[in-house]
Every structure is written in structure tokens, then in C-alpha cells.
Length: 185
Image (cartoon, rainbow, N blue to C red; front, side, top):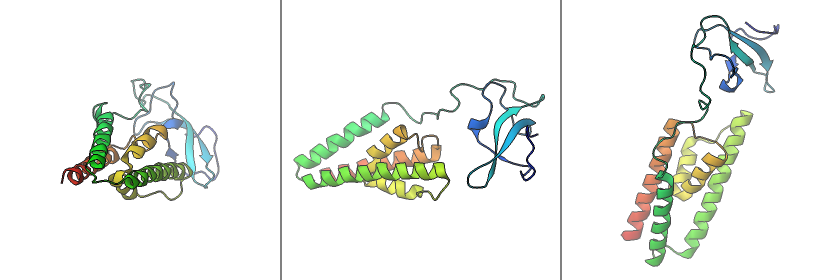
């Protein structure tokens, strides 16, 4: 039931998790809620200031850290991958398998990867056309995964998607395997 009735608002509205009242009980599927309908700049409607009413609300209070994504894997996985990557690059340089110019190209690729992540985050906020995840994974596979990891932390982007995080870890592993094969072949 809306707090303020809007004549042209639809009966069913989109609700973003951030618009649910944090002080009250968190509503469950099928619960009656109180909300304010709001038209977004793109013309779509959404419910804001959402709060559960009646007895159908969840009985457990919301955890304060519920908005944080679950960690996928140990905390040392990324630093270990970075150390291994730098060691493989150094070994490839020592073995003359990798020219110095390749490091410049790799730095440019990482800069490009960070920019593409930032543009995708911006597009997600605006609701406009997004960068396909396959393109992000290709950049990571080619060697831009350190910038991808940094962008995920700094921009808070793609961190809460378990499927994406698994594919991201696979891109890191594939890149490191390919670099190791190239270095020691």
C-alpha cells in the first residue's frame, strides 16, 4: 500500500534493496509493505522508503553487513596471484622470452581494463547499455586481470556476482597458466 497515492503509478513496482527501511524488520516475499512510488528520470516507476507492515514481516532483524558481498576464496588468493604473475613476468624477461615493450603494452592493457570497468559501472548506474561480461573477461584473460581486481575493489563493481567472480578467477588461472607455458617452453 503506497504512502502517497500516484494516479498513474502501476500496482507492482521495482524495489531496490537499498530502499528498504533498515531500522524495521525486513519484509519477506508476500509481505504487506508500505512505500512511496517514485518516477525515475528514465520514466520507470520504483518503490522507495519501503517498510514491512503487519505480521508477515520477517522476525529477524537485518544484519548490518548484509549488503557486503560474500568473500569467494581465501584472502591471500589475489596477493599470491599477483606475486606469481610478477615472478613469471620477471622470469620471462630474464629468459628473453618477453621484450620490454611487452611490459608497456601490458601496462596499457591494464589501464584500458580499468577504464572499461569504470565505463561499465557508469552505464550500470545510468541504466544505459553495458559492456558484455565476455569483453571484460577477455581483457582479464589477456593480462588485464590486476586492473580488473583493482577496479572491483575501488569501484565496487562486479563484486557481488558469484558467477562473475568464478569466471574472473578462471581468467586469472588461465592467464597465469599461459604465461607459465610461454615462459618455460
